[in-house]
Amino acid sequence: SWTPSGKDSGGAPQLKGARWFSYDELKKCTSNFSQSNQIGSGGYGKVYRGVLSTGQVVAIKRAQQGSTQGGLEFKTEIELLSRVHHKNLLGLVGFCFEQGEQMLVYEFMANGTLRESLSGKSGVHLDWKRRLRIALGSARGLAYLHELANPPIIHRDVKSSNILLDDNLTAKVADFGLSKLVSDSSKGHISTQVKGTLGYLDPEYYMTQQLTEKSDVYSFGVVMLELITAKQPIEKGKYVVREVRALIDKNDETHYGLAEIMDPIIRGAPCLVGFHRFIELAVQCVEELASDRPTMAEVVKSLENILQNDGLNTNSTSASSSRTEFIGSGKGCLKHPYSDAFDYSGGYTLQAKVEPK
Image (cartoon, rainbow, N blue to C red; front, side):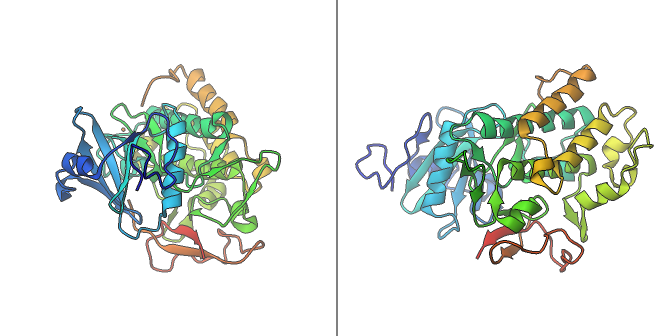
């Protein structure tokens, strides 16, 4: 346990601005972790809505007993979150680590995940301009992690279910559990066991096990394509990146050849400002070679240009599925994860977590 007195520190993280909560406090503010307050769940455990004694509404992520996230991963997430502060990153309010419990207390995001909004589950209507602003906000959050955090941070699991929307539809990137600090910037990459979510996973990282900031850029490009199609990246054995590449028709002035896979909500819109440039940028982000992809800072600049050129204010605000374990084996030279030889359609819902052996 970590206690606020520091007597029983057990390696308690050194935190700025994050509060230590007792188990009893969090139990009380969730009405004893009642099912009516449960707002999400995943491999790690459950998420509850709670109201602190101050009246602040929070989301409490409670790891299940014996959860896959060990104390070290938990501590990593707390230490990362407590020292990154940006309007497009989900803010950590505090944590609890006592009585065998691991809990993280976050700002509450009234409009849930981007994935829920795109699937129609949240009831939030995302028109094209809102989607552009969500893309820009998320990109700014990631660019902050890559360029301004010290040392830089690679998120490693960028996806639509890790982008949350507040009551103004401001996008906030969440879930730093897999994040990696880039402490040796001279090297430029980290050799690491592959982790991430299939569909968003950078193929170069998967095959070489060399993690760089460009791995996040690839995942973000997939999210950009998701903003166009509203589908999950892999559905019914089809991979959105391949579909888009095959369909693009630059002579189609309206939909760029993508009408058949576009979300009907935006396909019928009379004017999709900057649509062609948005598609081109997304395709650059999902280039096979990391060296051919832009940096997140360049992505931010491009998205700002799209919004500004169309007279939109870039500062204005814009509103978990089953997982299949996917084992990445061996070092180096693995099969391309999105090649024709790779079978996605094994009869399961594929929002696969890629975990090391």
